[in-house]
Length: 199
Image (tube, rainbow, N blue to C red; front, top):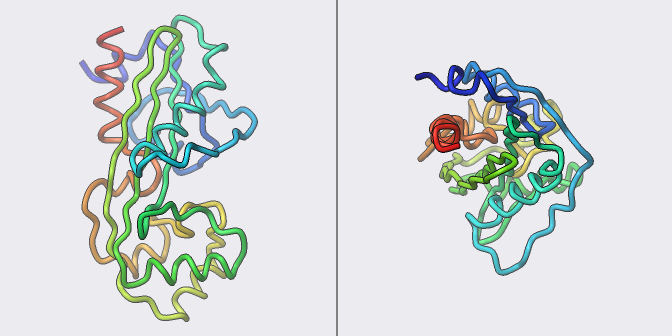
């Protein structure tokens, strides 16, 4: 049975304001609604490792919805981090920060990890996906053009792989392309299927 048939008796909720995650979930031909509550505190314990951080934050986001879930509701939350030099590279605070972040990624390999939480009133499933991204060495003019044109201030690592910089700058990806965009839809599809079958 196809996943959209298995979900016909459920109300699927994407708890994210990201237009990219909405677009990716639509690509699975699923019927869902987007529901966004107030922004959560995205702090996390310092002793978490690379894969634990986005899982922790995805679970933390889902906690805001658990009281509103009826028997037939399933909510999806996610968080994506960029990992370089053994630490998280966050969203840029301004133009100079964006320039510094992309300069660090330039000519380097970084890791993107997305944590996903699937939750119903009765159970919860948390998983992650890992991708490694290889950037060619970028000219300063490339970096400035991208920042000026695309304003990547809402993106972890200061870039969107689906934008111009991904076309001209990324030489190789190990793992899921969609994971780097913010939602590992291949893995999510199968995890959702298993989640529904075991409900």
